[in-house]
Image (tube, rainbow, N blue to C red):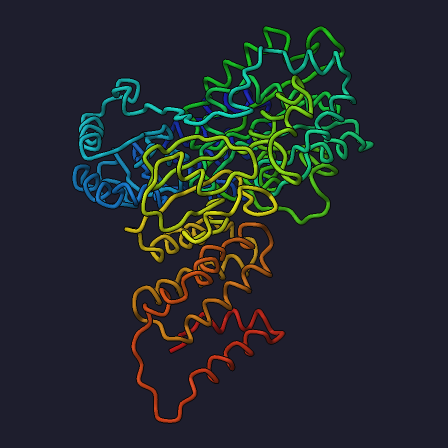
Length: 595
């Protein structure tokens, strides 16, 4: 172990910023992070062991206690539930003779749930020792159980178990724009670096992660900082359930994405870039490393890009199962080898990001678009979309549709047009933007995909009339409670209270006062949470409570009141209590029994 860790630390230059990558390797080798490994890493990196423990405890793919030689994780996303995940989990548990959440007595296998794996178009999905398993059914589950019981090494498993397809059904402006290697860089240098930034500004490109900040403005802010050392970060940690477009873009358009990062580096004066790749996409890691090597050999990365006095290279960092690291400041903390806890803002990353230096963080789709704009110009991109939402949006469509996969649409497209394309019938509603987005009913399908109406990072989950809305909300609410980083009380406590209160109501044990309390918890979590996770965690409840109040009311237990009891007055008193100034005390109080 000592020799292994010494070599590992040497590979990473004994830098604490690479702690997460080192711990991932230790986890892979020993199936947990042993106490002795913690001591050795602390000595080699000159950091306290408490920091190593904090990182190991924060990320769900790292463990301080042993896991099986085969660690099997099954996605608990709503789309996997819709495809029979619960029955599949029972079957696997029986075949492997291990309960979910447990390590088998012989240490061979452990079985557990995990959050969305980014494979919603080909579920039920899972991971074995970090590698993706797709389209699981009882037949495949039986094969997997036999392979594990026979201790067959993963490289000898049938390749079809690991098959991941792109499923691009509707390419548009970007997905039809296949660029030659180096085309964006050649066009930028021919036009001029500052002029290329002008073209990106003219294009109206806004960040495709959901928030929609103007890309050119962010890049300009970074370039104008006085610090000479700057960084470019591609956020490929798409952990939002129902989102998988970045997986496809990195699989089939990685050259264009890396080229977009390099264009950004030239504009901002950066010399180092990072691709933060979510841990669930481990299967892409080797392929992406090979592409980076190809670009270095072609003179598109390295000390003299295209023979010019321009030095830029890209390094891949793997995440380890933390949804919160999709938030840009949490991602930067993770890049620095720390728990991914969001920072206070301001300052923003463009002024103080990675290692306190100016940093641009954009997602995969944004860099893809930037590369295409560098070649084709701003007007080409701005010709599609609406006045406030230029260009196109790539969607990850899953759920109750005939053709789950990737679709690209000009902004301004109606939800009904999208549903027509992916093959749906009897649609109850659509979750736009994932759990942190909004649930729209079948009365709202004339609404449009646009920042001024329905903004989204790309998740688009379809539900038909056979689905129970409260089951969906429960799944999303449990997801947020599980993924809360625990930094702030409103989110750490509030998301658990939301989960428990919702479970009480859907279980038929709630009263009218519990629905009032549920809504008030929602507002407290939304208003007082530290970052976007807590601020959007209540959205599944709030958006469905607004559209389907009768569903919540139908779950309430029947109560007989004394003659003369005024229920409406009692509920109004509860609402007034929720508006008092002592929010923290109220948050604690509403965790009690409201019967």
